[in-house]
Length: 345
Image 1 (tube, one colour):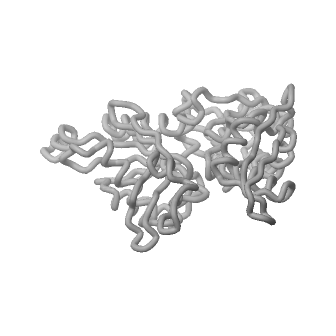
Image 2 (cartoon, rainbow, N blue to C red):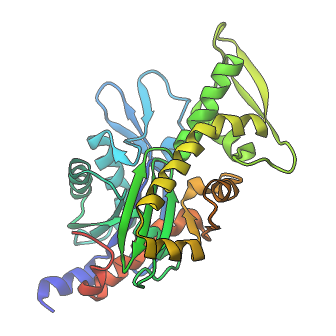
Image 3 (cartoon, rainbow, N blue to C red):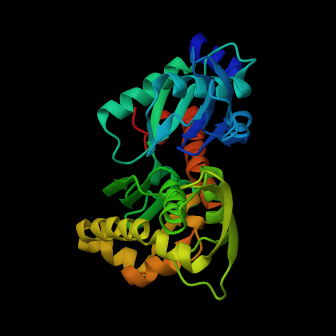
């Protein structure tokens, strides 16, 4: 081991990052998941000076004066505002590595069909945030590893990782994706569907936090055993005056149909292109669902009904991607050849 490598191991701990549209999760080498905060930034609109990030910025959402704005620097799983994304990453990394003498290596999760331009923007943002070296790991691969699957086997498996900004589908065999699909329809789309439905049907404008709360409380994509109700408070679109309406779970099921149908179609598309030998394995073993978006009530029942294939929900589904990236990170620290199973440089 050369002196540079020795000092790096001595004074720096590497990080795995799931930089999601809604939340950022950070895994610290040897310590596990140490940060789980909203991917959100509050800044001054005059000079774009950053005022807060993460949980502190989330608390300001919908409550800021005109001179301030709260914004997510990612949409659909990719960076939409480079400077805000870099600063968000920098500040979150500093929370973990503020006493490190050497910059960390970073393993960061990406959608399976990320473009070269999007990939370059993410790598640059990581370097701007203080990363010494950046490695990429595809989200379905990380999710499968984090869910406890042995992806090295010569056996096909299909994983659907439904996050906030993207749904990533991959048929995996021998440690690599054989078929990959990614669409920008996921948890965020379901939240937007609530707000859109309330606006169209009740002429009521509600904020994103309200729509998110209602989605979590009564949202479903398969009939519930009994109706659930939630109150939506907002502004009347005609008068601007405050008003509230009561929604039921069946209404939301109707509102969610377009987004669910899009996810169903991309899964079917992946299945259609999967080689027959791997498809036989998938029919026997079923499809694994991971990601926070997969928590929506009845999604596994709806997908089973639409595909005719068994559906399994991973444990700690919103943590599978970061846990898998953490496993890849640990292998990077111990054995560079083993790490190549998971990441691309």
